[in-house]
Amino acid sequence: MALFTEQLFADHLTLPYPEAAVVGDAYYAAPVPDLPLRLRIDFAPTIRAGRYDGLRLHAVHLERGRIDTAVLSFADYGAFEARDRRLDRKPGQDGYGTITDWNHSERPPWAGIGVTRLRAAIDQYVRLWIPGAPPVRTGPHPVTAPVPQARTSPSRAR
Image (cartoon, rainbow, N blue to C red; front, side):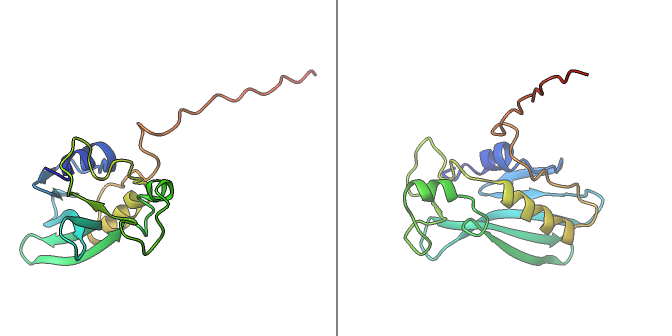
């Protein structure tokens, strides 16, 4: 899989849905197993083959089919701010806020993705369309979060 979809969802987005699976390049979940509502997330394609500019979320009813679709743009949610700044890419320039699967390397095309704002948006979407869904942890990923340092204060003489 050129996009390393399973690794993205398991190691980075870490959504809290126990009934979930990656099939091909899409993530499927039942955020509330007792409801007939499901979530599907895949990559939002651009007009260029193999280039993606965000995540596409679908709320799906088991009997009625898709009831809503939203696209979370990588640029809008700052997913590749650090990479684009390092490469001096600006909005409107080729490759800004996008990923490609043209190179089939050992490194995922989304390496270095910032997921905090994406997770917050996914949480808002899911909780709107699937009532009772567990909240998505929206802080920094536990692997990349800095370890808090104990603060020491000078002792005061009384």
